[in-house]
Image (cartoon, rainbow, N blue to C red; front, side, top):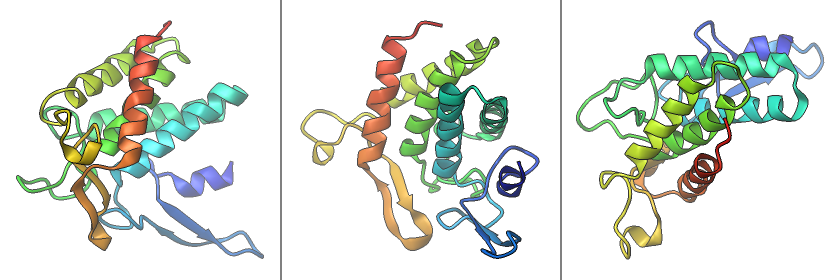
Length: 190
């Protein structure tokens, strides 16, 4: 499918936004609006792509969706540079002591990996990755103590660093996907 080809790079990562000419269908511009650069792999965008293509395959059984989900998952597992696998806010952001992690991206990824693990014959690698993320997310480094963190479960998400918005803060969709991932983990039937 030409539309999917326009969104994805050879390593499996994807652009955040692809603008098309409404008349010709030609690609006008590819960008990553909330990422480090237009050609970078914004962590939450990659997570949502993995999640979306996994869900599309689960509903349609169209192998094109499954292949894209697998490509994204492999890219994520190969490119994460943090020891605990909680990604920096962008896979291409210069890594340093002050580079923010994005727990929301990790939560979405964990949930998607657990779902993907049920849909492929070699799913154990995806299950293990999702499980490892959940263990890290449940650690004191990321899971807030009761009564703190403005009532949110998780700390250290990034909304939009380029726009100076929601940097190293709790975000509701991190909590949502964390709970969904825990539910999928507890009800796993691989």
